Image 1 (tube, rainbow, N blue to C red):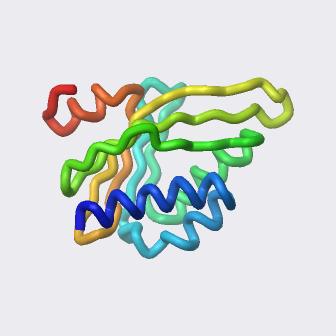
Image 2 (tube, rainbow, N blue to C red; image 1 turned 135 degrees about the vertical axis):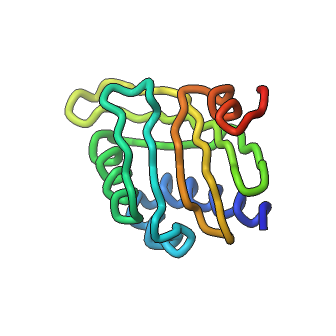
Length: 136
């Protein structure tokens, strides 16, 4: 199941980049647990926590609405079984300002029975690995 989870995440990123948040979430909605939760990185200004599939979709849509040419590229995927760390490169242009935005961050996905149950954002891969008790 672990390799299947990794492939599903790759598909999600590819669909997001090709067709946008709604296409990606519609195609893969069945892979999110009903109680799916998202916790934004503490390093962000005003980090928020979201619970439920719809909150996740709304959060991604908000991100997509803020940028033109938004892309989220998985640079590295670390398969830890029921947890997956993804190092993500985000780049785009601020909507309205056209200011280029580039950043790299890490995501920690927790899975249960083939469904994503949570997503936590971290500033770095080291922080994400530390959260599961592993050194970088």
